[in-house]
Length: 290
Image (cartoon, rainbow, N blue to C red; front, side, top):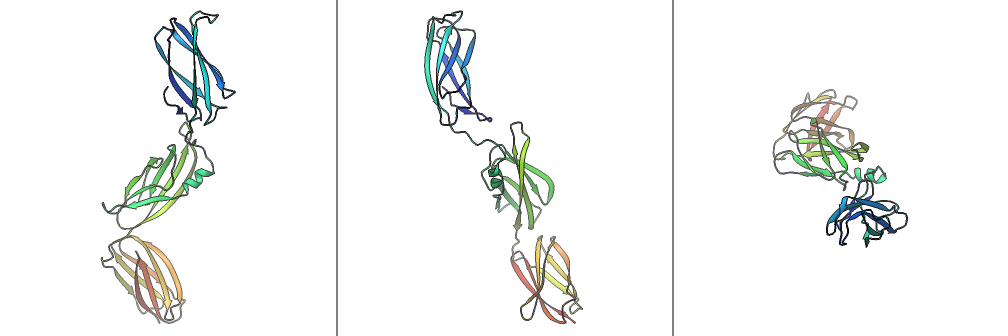
């Protein structure tokens, strides 16, 4: 007998070889199941007959009411051609155990739980701004994963837990999104779930950054010029000389020279500190409102 195979519909295939050890030419084989109860008996016809000493490969499909773990027992009875009284026949008996099969590709609460387990990300040392991504959970092979990237409209597709490598255009903060699609037996989308993740490629902090602010003093409107070789978010915070925060906001800019407008005319006249944070580094500039 050959291994028992699982089908996508939850049934099993059992293959074997019938050998005619009798002295007669057999016309058919009758499969009679003795356990578990409820299985439908089957008949195999040998085209042209099965001569003495020859063999025939057969395949049985087993399904409900049998379940994984059941011991399926059956008798195979070979009958001679044109022997309606079944005088010349031979029998053999066999038992097999149905194995557990992988979970079917169905949409259930577990699918969403798997999908929201996130994205694994490994940043490679080379080439620059390159990372390897994969699903955070163990997905089924029927799950299609569509990857999208913040730097390009192009998408990429993988299946199951296969990983994918993507190179971004430079340093900075980018986004990757993963849409997991559970496919049915005819390759149609049954359900889907999306999740995104930010990925940062930080610069060598030894590379200098240039910050200028003008006019200073002013009536509360300043221009902050940021010159840095990477793209990403900048966190700004204004505090008074007592260390109290009076305003904060985030901006996202590109690599190179960027001008950010600081609008704080509602604050009282006096001296304030403008704190700038980016890529894990902090700078402070003094500003004066007159």
